[in-house]
Amino acid sequence: MKTTRQAFTIVELLVVISLIILLIALLLPGLGLAREQGRRLVCASNARQTATAVLEYSNDYNGRLPTAHVNNMGQRLPWLWDMPEHTVAELAERGIMREQMYCPSNTHQNDDGLWNWNWYKVLGYYWLWEMTGNQPPLTIRSANGKLRNGYIVFASTQGATELELITDANISQNGNFAQVFGGWPTPHRSPHLDPGNLPAGGNVIYLDGHGGWRQFSEMEMQSPGPQQWF
Image (tube, rainbow, N blue to C red; front, top):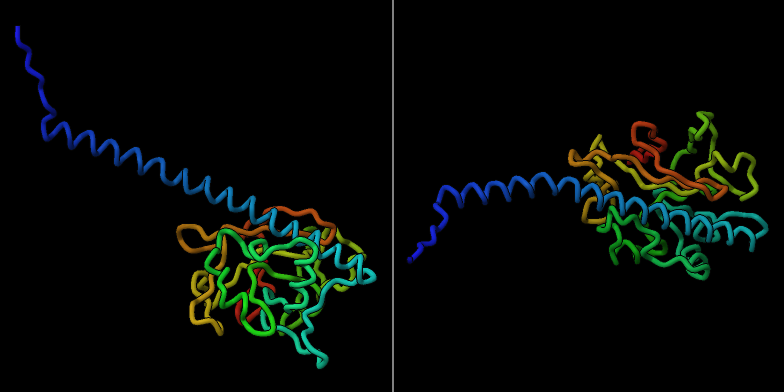
């Protein structure tokens, strides 16, 4: 007896396609979140390893942390993520590679033009050692809620468990965290942005080498023009 095979009707085929699209729509946000969680872990590792190299540097220079001075006139750098080439070279000698100085959630910042900017490099984290940036003095709220003024000069500074040394570079301009204009033709942006282009938070490494994630709701604007948050 001859049997006939029934093909899918157009309606059935459309139903199957709709179900596939629905499943993809349900899975994609979870996959995106998982990828971002992975980037946060790499980001924390980058900052922690760099902090270790900075503390090794201080051991070789009588406990003193790097400074942002770039010449014998005491000229300083414009923004908190800038670093003199000689300091980058010192950290490279202690095992820090270029990729570790940029957050993996903001890969467009790792650009040859920023890496070779001038006599300094534009990087991807805030460096809070002595006189970083041509900015007003900082008033930083530490983990315990207390305020401190200025930047860290010596690794032996009291209260190392509460003093931020390296943080993610959350930055804004007129309330915009996705487009911040400076001297580079392409606008800068904050890392770890949510779908609404607002920062979810950032990694913070303290002077004693420990670190953790700080929600953006717990951050404060620390320096104006542009606004720099941690």
